[in-house]
Length: 214
Image: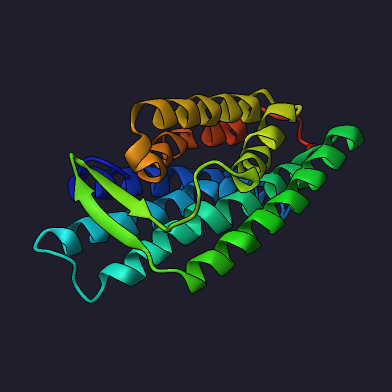
């Protein structure tokens, strides 16, 4: 996350608590991946909090591993987990099929990004109150559009209003981060994504019929 180590650690605590609350109300294994999304955010923000600390006196030996961990969550885990989680809880067959197509796209995006991270150097630095990541990956290419399709589309097509709300927050955060903080896009975009954990908690705390398990 952006701004400072303190902000990252506070966000990690809040999203971790959100994930624990959602998981405590999940019904069965199908709901567990969606409920666990805030925990992925928490792990990601914890990694960036320590990354802030590692950069405070100049890059340290831990910096590359922390940067890799943060980018792995953003570029590999998120595009795979999001559509899979939506597909598992979606009761309508047509919408579920769309989410499954998005999951296939997400696996491709995640695989590509993992291969890229594993074979290219990562430049990371604290600049103007944000952490800037440079993987050398061109910003304008088909992978970027596929990433959006995998992470936003399944949320917006869900039959759950709470999941739709999550999709709107993610989409708005994506646009705001891109146009306002382009140099620190990955870090700031994930700030909005982490804030969307509240929508996931809403999905699990709202009243549901006793027979509904997804």
